[in-house]
Image 1 (cartoon, helix red, strand yellow):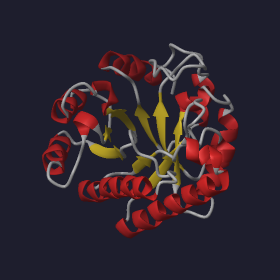
Image 2 (cartoon, helix red, strand yellow):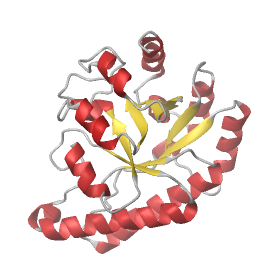
Image 3 (cartoon, one colour):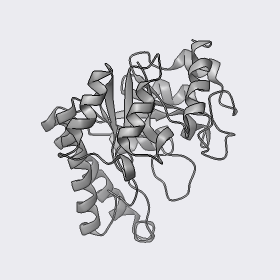
Length: 254
């Protein structure tokens, strides 16, 4: 299944974004980045769900990530972050979402100073997300992060550590991994049975610039051959022109 993230229309309302994306031919779902102008809640989800259903489109929810840290050593911040994510899971259940994408926690100055506490708290939060998602019947995929010092979950080894002992799935962000290790085959082989979602975008291997497919140095011919076909593939690009270019690119390469 191919889809488009609403990040390509992040400067307009969610209603406008869904209208524009729903006019794109050849897609099966929309990935709603649930924050800022595209915030979903128990009161507004129905209108947006109706728009998608009218166009025959399914949905994926990308949980909020700005100003959130599930690995915070400040329990009030950690608890507030989890409450926000739990609300996103509840909305996803109401919308019949295919899955929910979540980010790992990140290192704060306190987390850097007390790494053992950071690890314990981070794992506790992921276990809580796992339990609540199973209670709601929603699949949750943990996304790998780009090369940035405070971000966690950048390598396949680290993602494996974070999801160990849970039934959380994996969201492979191809562009993010290209800024870290470039070792796509290892990542895909390690998580083949747990990768249920893929973010597609390109870059120069250094900056997480979310370019159109083919405009950076991601080895797409190799990657498209390896990616799990049962996973949902989402274009995570910064504008609609890039989405159209990438759709044309992928249709000539698969």
